[in-house]
Length: 128
Image 1 (tube, rainbow, N blue to C red):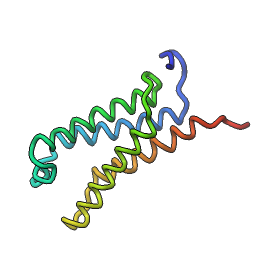
Image 2 (tube, rainbow, N blue to C red; image 1 turned 45 degrees about the vertical axis):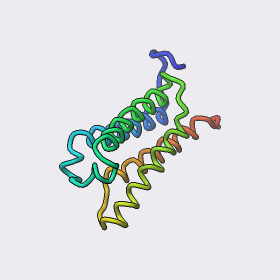
Image 3 (spheres, one colour; image 1 turned 180 degrees about the vertical axis):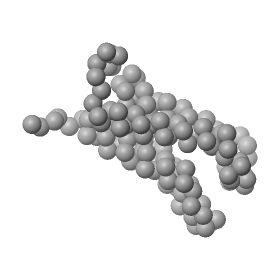
Image 4 (cartoon, helix red, strand yellow; image 1 turned 120 degrees about the vertical axis):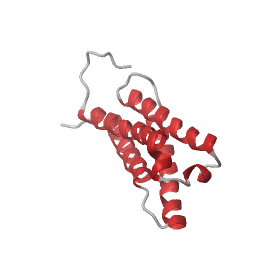
């Protein structure tokens, strides 16, 4: 675990920014999701599934940020891969079934990819 007075690497900062986007997608999902996608809850099996997805994104974003900042021991790469995979499925499903562009699902895919790449880069020693 990192102490609060230790500086962060640029990779950690970038990973934290990407994790913030994951949480932000969850907040947007909860606040304006049904306005943007009125048939959204039915796609998730009803309001319970809909809200579970939004809250899960918020929690995942918080965990990913805590892991990126080294505040908690979180398996960042597997969690980011899971979030990105879910976002990819929603993005492709929406494109094929509705013929639309799901910006927030694509945001999950991109943010998760950035998280995974930066975290994998943190594991490799820096060569001078």
